[in-house]
Image 1 (cartoon, helix red, strand yellow):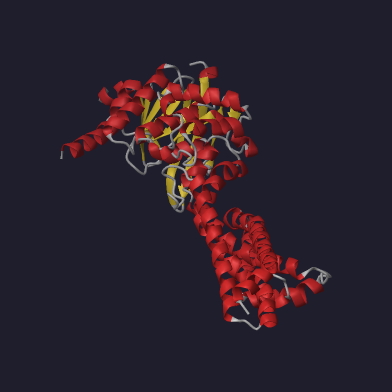
Image 2 (tube, one colour):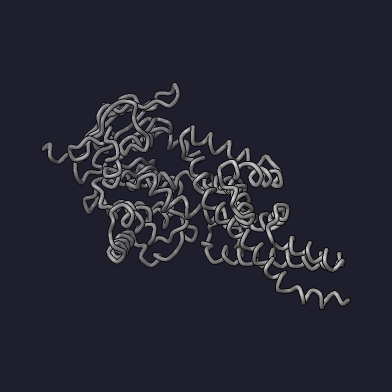
Length: 251
Length: 225
């Protein structure tokens, strides 16, 4: 593997809340264009891990590198890195007072310092990417969950990020809306976007992920291609976990 | 003598009193806004000393009767600061404004705190600084949330402004009192003044309500929808 391909390097991340150690040393490299999916029981630090990467939650220990530059301890430069590390949230967090279009425009205007016309054109392009250009003038309260999530993906895309972090992007959506959001994410993966995805959608993980990281108790317990983790007899823990979910679904 | 013709004779004076009263109210609301909003931001986002100073300020200005505050500033604090030459109007407006700032800061503080936590997180995740996020995301939402509560400040200050009579500001109540002294007609004149206060109150609230509707956003609560 060529070292230059590595866009994001995560090194020995530790994080505790109170006395509770949520992350206990997580490391991995992300190559450009790769989709990594994080699977695992609730409370094993998957979402915290994503927030440690863009420093929304500063880790207690460990380092994050983006394109060879250290993101951790970067002081005010963190605002530069956050443009390059997009994030999509479970509850969308669209700006409630702005239309879909203005949601996507805002950071282009206020962070990138683009002119109005240029920002508008770029925002419309990104909305088209996620199939939301017809909803440009609607407010978040007027959108379905799936539509809102697609706008929030467009908002992240607008900054031309090197990588996008997806924090359970479909957990707040019903199956129909989940499908339309996963469709957009599949397309992004195909087009070569680098993505880290925390999800419980096994179908998505198996069909899109280059690598699955199964997390348990704050560490990466198993790591490999979806095929390997699901079918190689040496790996058992993720299969156990999925078996538990399936049997619960059948109840 | 006919009460109506007296009122008509005095109308220019009454109107000058109305102008003076509205001047007090507008000046006090503006001062209260200019001080109250930064105080609210200080209380939510500021360091511990900043929060402490704002807390003491609010405690002081909300803890004293308006008339006591007025006398403190008129007879004591402003002369003590070498500002004894300030006109009664200015002192009245400033005291109403300083007190209004204490109340307004708490209206804005509540509004800022009621903006969802995710709004700041999303803004920061896009690379906005804290200041940019507050200005572009938090405040536009907080101001809309605050407006219905803030609108109450108008009738509060309008009615409070009458205490400025006590330090000799020539506002509506002062004019009214002079009319009563000179004409010896009491009830009809006070009723007329009361009517004027009610009209001013109603008109101002109506205008604020219209503003609420104008800046309303679908699905975003301003209470005016």
